[in-house]
Image (cartoon, rainbow, N blue to C red; front, side, top):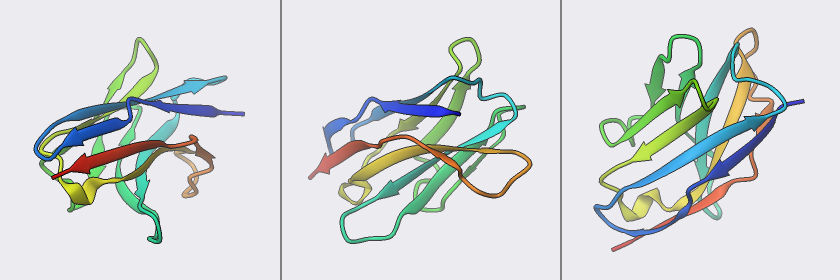
Length: 119
């Protein structure tokens, strides 16, 4: 099984930056896509962006495009979410997830880490 752990959550003022990391235990990310999602209380889970480990190609939701960047660290087998120009509406519980490239289902999920952006 694949186990995912997020780190780097916290609080920041609007306009600031935070960096999250997603680490896998038990298996390498090779052959997987790694995605970031977020969910605010009372709202549906929202797709933030994703990275395909092989080649490092990325895709972002319009709401974060130009502000957030997803990258990989091959040596550490981790995926980072760099968040710049944060806005209060970015406040949410952030999750990383993983799926095999041969499937369309995000089958592995981390526990989540809280991001709070104050005005």
